[in-house]
Length: 269
Image (cartoon, rainbow, N blue to C red):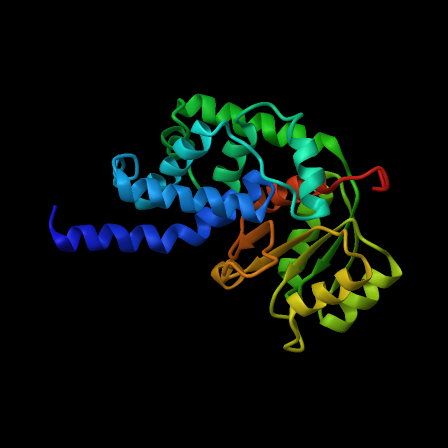
């Protein structure tokens, strides 16, 4: 293979590492564990890049290589790095094997059933069945109160509709950092869906940090057109991150997972 082709391959892999880290973080329930397996995947590719080159799509190849590494280790979860992670790991034990991987790959990372089949080494029909099972198991599990931080009215309406269709109650929509803190203080949510850039040029990240200073055990789903800005390796990173423009399925999946894995006996039914 020519040096240019090798360089292009390496560049393509590097461009997809933030998305692999996002996936590994959500899959293992731990930022540390996710990063360890992402790093182990890159090391394995350096030694033998056959799995990564087994497809013409570098992202599929990277995720396939990750799955080979992770599966060969027994598909473990990591040591909990937050209270949310501890609850996530407890809940993961009750899920049908392979289903959460398929759902994450499809709804969050945007892979087709055929892509997932190649990544997980299953048939496309099996991949589709895994996705359906995971969605049913998660959406049945729990319902609660969801707060939306979003300054675009149409987008906010879409999010509210999706969240309510899944069976949750929306406490309200905040358009600014100040409104968000006030809304959370008056009606503590079980989950926050937050945009990053708000109406008065305030930050959704700052709003979430203010809220978590009062209620540290609230899971958060960030929505952004620039996910790489939140996937830097700094701590903490979001376990749930949706890229704009988003699909209904992405929101349903992330909300169901976040609520499922952070659920406690105090959640409102």
